[in-house]
Image 1 (cartoon, rainbow, N blue to C red):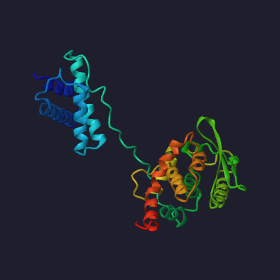
Image 2: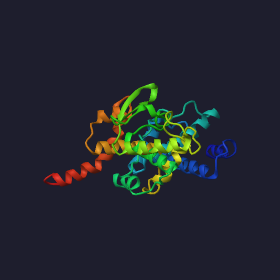
Image 3: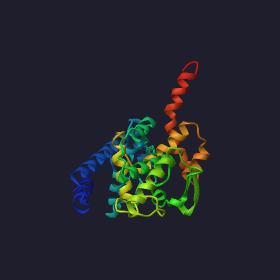
Image 4: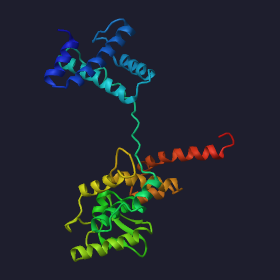
Length: 294
């Protein structure tokens, strides 16, 4: 039995990989073996070094393969040589020292302004307790950019209706003050009245379930997903998407990056900078309108 066949059997019977995964490994390995044969005239496991593996990576990148695909192929070949080390056929894995191509971080999605205005202003929510609460959840997440955990822990006495601001406790118990839009004030007042009428008490945690118990993560996720589905086809429709949207819209309106960092409760600027990508489209439009050769 050849070493490649031995490796495939190892994947099938010891690792119990799916047939789809086995075929992918087989294809990646065949590709590498062919590259070695074309480059140095043969495929000899004892003559493969990190330099040859790097040359293969370069050739894959030159053939316009994505970094993600190249990384997957490298992983296949790395496991093959790991298997050979286990069998004591080689002393070192030549893939270990080969740097992986950088995979671009997936940029956060966000909801268009007009879509959110449509959702919040055009009668999508009922006027009973669950409807007003659900609208408040969406408005709070979009209007303040708070994290899900911060929203769930928000107490009524942390809301200052006169100053239009809330006090939240973020990561590492760090407190911060966040202003909220004026549209939120009447909604909070309406919700408080319904909450008192429904359960006979006021104060305590802001958000409650239909049974008067503290709201929980799954409820918030469900409310956000259900309502965002009405106005956007974004794949991700989570509370965090509304936080992304909050930051994106602020930056698009000219807000200072450092100010947005403080509002979001980020400990460093690099975490906030991910949101600047979303302004590229706007900058491109401005360039085309303003530049004499745009």
